[in-house]
Length: 349
Length: 217
Image (cartoon, rainbow over the protein chains, first blue to last red):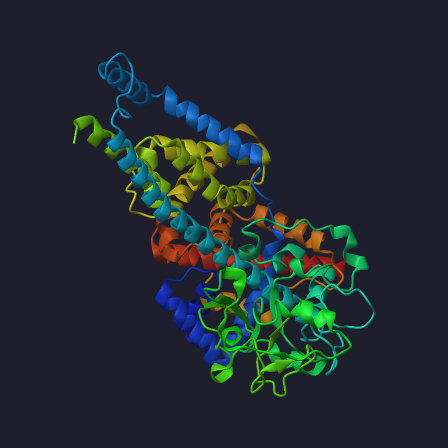
């Protein structure tokens, strides 16, 4: 017997389908985070209707867009309005004196206009970039939601446990791309989703990293690989988990994944150069404040265990304001540290 | 300053504004003023979601491409009557949905083959939906291949009535709000909600029936 009110059910329903207005979205999130029954029903909803993802369509063919634009241009110039405009412009040209434009006659006018162009370009180019960044941020959220659904499906097929390889305390978590038999990267858990066909490999690359460009990926190689082929194929970081902790993460409000950890991004080379010699890296204050570079350090998208994805402008969004990219009370790392408590969010690599 | 200089400056201000293609409103305004590049940007911005909607709703590639082009052509011909301050996306999908439905009806008139189920299933409430998902496990078996699932989903969705299929796609894939769907479909918000409940419940039941048939095999 479901104890939620009809209004609460409508809220969950509308939230799942993205039909709510902004104020209602916050209300729905609060309901899911505070009410166990609501959280469980929402999880069931997602599990039940994730099959709709099978209704893929593929991208819009390039020829279709090009053909459409060509037809529109033809329509524009065949209209009377277009012709009238053309005649008007031609008339203006003739009246300007011998058909020559007198626009460039005065050097002072030319210089003033050139300055105007520089000012406008200086304003418009950053504006254009911010539109694109916002678009990549939204697409990144959509990809994380897709990964979240993949995690749910995996858990559903595997006794409510998230994908987890046998990564033991003391094992390195940074060796992305290593294809040996030992599990030495925290990305191997996520690779199980690709191998099991729960999530597309391309969804693990944040569009903000590649400026919207898709990485080419040879799917025929998937079955032969133990991990993502290289660092550039996975630009998200995941909570370090041992096999036992994965069940706790399902459907919780703990942070499970986020845009790539900015702290260790450059450190991989240092870890690699000193592998086996236990290099110790001490973090600077600047590293402790930096946001993920996926979205130009403006913040990071974070994904919770219950499937909620949000953009956080600050890193301190773990339990009790915990920094999601470092361990509590630790400012030096060797690349093999594990959290001492399930409340210590530590997303790597 | 000379009149010609001021006229040229005015032209440059317009062009400068066009460079700042930040919002759909600005793009449309620029397009109405005669900037083809602005419309190319609109097509580029909306081609994927529009194509996805039409492909899921209509399925036949030839019809999808015709409606895709007709939608943007309609946008072009009615550009003067549109208020650029209103969001473009719902308006574009309103045109697309109308053209898609017209196309379906034309197909039904021209062909004896049904392109969608006739008749609506009985209305379902939000309580019914939650009872359904609580009672059934409507996820597929472990051993079913993902491509087979995709095929079954396409079959179930294609067999839904036009109204229900349309609203399910607009809600789930395009993530329109209730208010936007009401505008696109020209129906009250209450009808949007009840129709979406029915669509979701209808999909869940048909999917469950499909699973039941597989169990019997």
